[in-house]
Length: 276
Image (cartoon, rainbow, N blue to C red; front, side, top):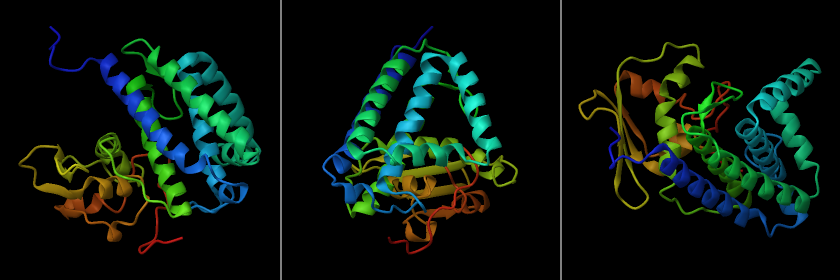
């Protein structure tokens, strides 16, 4: 029997899509009024300007929308296009960002806006329980929405850093933090290390002063600190030494320097004392 007090998959997805839209609008507000010189500003990601960051989000949204709308086409197109790029010695992610960044900013902004709306519509239409193909393991629509929110927030941080802007932390960070906790084992395996068996208790202070927790209360390994700092850590937007996070226990201590909430190979992260 379904517990009426536990949100169903559909309502969870609806909330995630609303939060994804809100996070996108925050970033949109940072770039909408930029002159061409602003779009050309360097961001903390080497070789990527503000335009590259938005182009990457638009590129990933387009692939995500195709996976949700037509899974078979996604599999066929991704294998063909990615295969051709890799055979030519090109990185598909870098290629997508470079192609988008070459567009005129108004066209790129319009394309990103339209693509993220198509993605929301496609994800909302995915039948409950359906797993969508992806460049990594298949995932449900809610997981894909969470991943898009995490990327939007993380790349938005790069844009904010380039512009010298400060974004107000929101409750949407909980999605990013949750993904960061869920990827603990992946962070170890992607570094060639065995996934830890010991549980880790994560205790974060939410932007409103409340508490967000994961893991058993009595776990010997623990990570604690501000939710914003934890999200900056797991998206590798700040070096652990520059964050107010504490780790207790062998697993927790080993996790902080390698934590990553995103798929793919280990990221380069940021140097300690980072500044543009």
